[in-house]
Image (tube, rainbow over all chains, first blue to last red; front, side, top):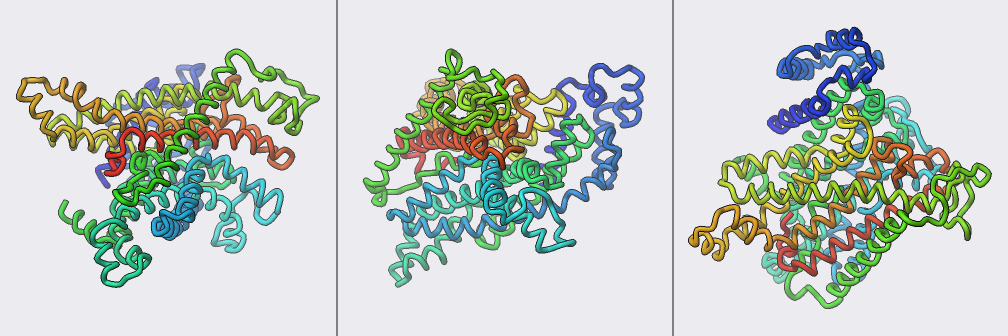
Length: 307
Length: 296
């Protein structure tokens, strides 16, 4: 994980410098005077060599000191810390909503896989995969906020201030973000369960007198955990990317919204640190999923211990 | 972008349980996929020559007309015909997706073959690199790029390709290794064929079905990413229109004109669904064997 974080930080650092090359020009625009360019290079240490810039940035990240934004006039580290809460609630909330649903629905459809009930799950998941998140968000707003008036369309309330309002404000965002990932996980569970259903040990379990359902839950699910875990990586990335979209539709003051604002105002220094924070969250979630599946399937635990 | 890894894993059906009903459902998927993707592509090509209305002609008197016989999808906030805009918007979305997918497939397949063909040491280095690429979501890369080179087509294409290349490499490398371990490859080696010859002339044709299925899946994912980025304002810039941008414009008006969001959004959804169906159908048609093993 540390190796990935390091490599990822290098990629982000280089991406911001490779094209065009000069961050000062990026931030001030091409019409900036040489004096102001020199001033901003001085202020952000951009006149140093790339390795120097990189290591002072990483040292800053480790110390929690990311410097100050240029146009925004805020301390980047503090700003990011404040915005972590909504983003983490949103993403982890979606993960915790979608995994149990996906496991239950996926197993159900695998057990009933020749019947129409199983097929129906597949069709619904197929549609769930195809809905763009921003569209789903707007549809939910039209139905639940505009037409029915049950839930707020935008805004965010911290769970520490007003728990009820906080939950109400997060229902639609979490629903939006979880649908796609639930569809993907459901299909993974379904396909890998169907494969397990035909295996010899399942036949043995059935011969011992287990019903198909209990054999599927007790034996099949554990064995299908590996393929699900190995493909979790992509889904976490998608989840974070989705949170950028969802935060912007629902006006949630999280990391994703700050990222988009910073991109639009060409706040390169903030973008650099924000991208890294998002990458770290992705890696952290991967670790979490690995641990969870490790509990589910001891073989994963042992495999990792060997590596 | 979520469905790539499962691409060819979708149909891990084995032996006796692969009933008649299921395979006919799969071919139904394929036919539906071909018809729907064909329809969208034709509409987009048609838009170069003809649209029902001028897609950029502002007519404020006709603003926010509900869908009717002359404006099939209604009109937008400036009175422009929405259906014509969707037709034209397809140009940008499909162009960006096509270019990124081609880059992704070409370089990704090459990288995957290289990883499979080189020794274990280089192979694992290449795998590591592609893992990092996969972990970085393309929306994030697009946002970082948009900071430096500005929002627009180029950022989006580079960002999507940046993600497609490692994903393809990852999908290709496993099957390529399997083929490399087969007898006929060894026979070719004893004939003194070069490694590159073997990889491109003998391995590549054998993994082509996987690459084709992957291409279709990536196309669907590309449309989703492009639309999301345009929706966020990082993709297509005015005057170019794009599917995501139409929805961005519709957002403030969800209360007044729900159709303005619902119709273009459904259109995007059906397009993505179509390419996914095409990929699923192709997976079964082209390579039942590999789609059973699960190669992603």
